[in-house]
Length: 96
Image 1 (cartoon, rainbow, N blue to C red):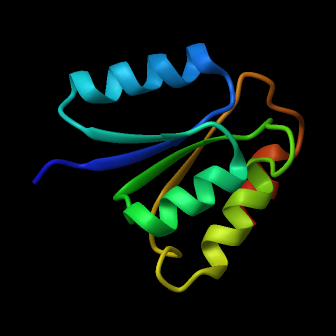
Image 2: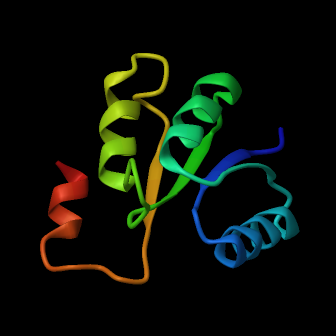
């Protein structure tokens, strides 16, 4: 079975790079350019894994993870937080 991965990333280049890398390893990808679109795609597609940027305008990665983990249909889907600008305390905040 081919893993289905949702990439939630507002930066076009980063989104394209992640998608390319995942597809080269045999994954099927779905993409979303912002947090709200990502939540909608997760509910529609029911991916096996979600890669989510932390720093996005509007709904940031913290908000997206909070919403996804409150949804009984999605709470068990693993989410990997992706960021180039980690701040002190971000890891603990995301794990909470």
